[in-house]
Each structure stands twice: as C-alpha cells, then as structure tokens.
Image 1 (cartoon, helix red, strand yellow):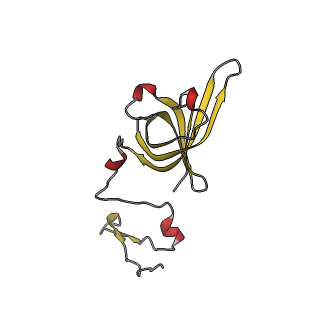
Image 2 (tube, one colour; image 1 turned 180 degrees about the vertical axis):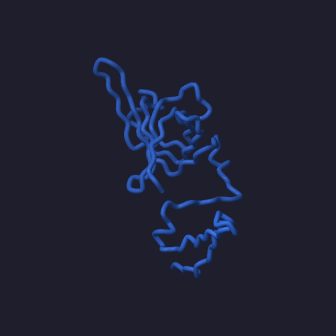
Image 3 (cartoon, one colour; image 1 turned 90 degrees about the vertical axis):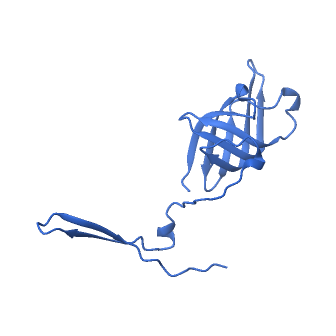
Length: 155
C-alpha cells in the first residue's frame, strides 16, 4: 500500500464533543499510528498505559475513519508556562469511510483488496490492447484482452 497522512479530529465514542486534533499516518515500514494534539487521559492517569478498542475520527476532507485495537505508545505532558499534552497510538486496523462504534460490529460479508504494484511485482501480464480501425482509418473498436495466468501456489 502507498503511505498516507490524514489530518482530522479524533474521539472516543460517544464523546464526539471531546474530539482532539491529530494526524493518522501509514507506511509499509512503520504501520499505522495516530498522533493526537492533546490526550484522552485525565492527568490522574498519566502514568497508566492505555489501550482503546475503538477511536473514531473525521478527516479534514470529511471522510469517516474507525481505528481499532489502539495501543498507547507515547504520552507527554508539558507544564512549563502552559499546559500541553499529546498521545501517540499504534493502530492495528484502520477502516476508512465508515464509523463502527462497537468493535463487535466490524463484520464484512464481502471484501475487495487492492495491492499497489502487485501485477508488476509478480510479473503478471495486464493484458493486450488492440485498436481496430474502421473502413476510413478512424477508430473503429478498442479491445482489451485479458488472458488469465496459470495458478500460482504458495506454501
């Protein structure tokens, strides 16, 4: 998958009124992380490592996001002159375009997976294209012919 960075607001269900700004990032090397400007934890719980089954968000472009199995990996508190806190989470799964308030509701009857550059990686032919002219030499027909490759077995 291609790496991405999504700015948005994030909250614990059902407290959308307590949403915090933050950035969701993904890369093949690092995985999925959410960095908040602020903290879901009260000051009395700063020493505790928190995990949350679900964090909900809306990106700056208005896309709904559900983050599941969110483990806190960093928490900071600054008291020098002004109060500042932030939290960083390692995210197991991110679901873009949907909100799931309950982790048990994350069920699918169908799934489509797309891998960036998979055909190039496995050297699959993408197909053959042909332009067939009409009688006057103009575009008569455009054909795309796909020949299914032999099955590849992996153990």
